[in-house]
Length: 86
Image (cartoon, rainbow, N blue to C red; front, side, top):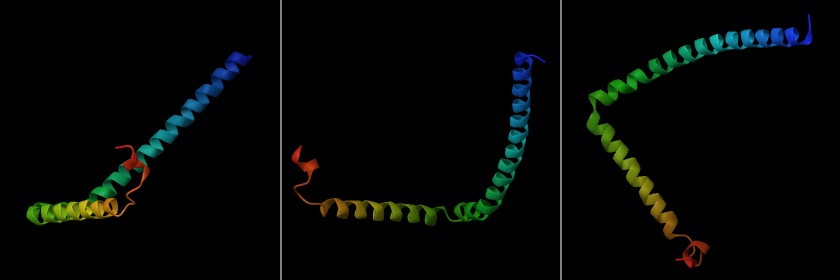
């Protein structure tokens, strides 16, 4: 067997190994997706049953985040480098 045939055989072997790994990973991804779906299903039911409550919680969380950002921004020193350039 010459070097070219040997290199080609090594590439074929590597491709076969990669295909086997892809099949294994595909199975793991499918199992993980099924597990995630089982875990999320109860939450989806709650969201469907109580859309107003979920919206209220999301809105409240957003407003709290904005308030925290405002407080942190207002508490920064007035001589910061960002303010000097404006």
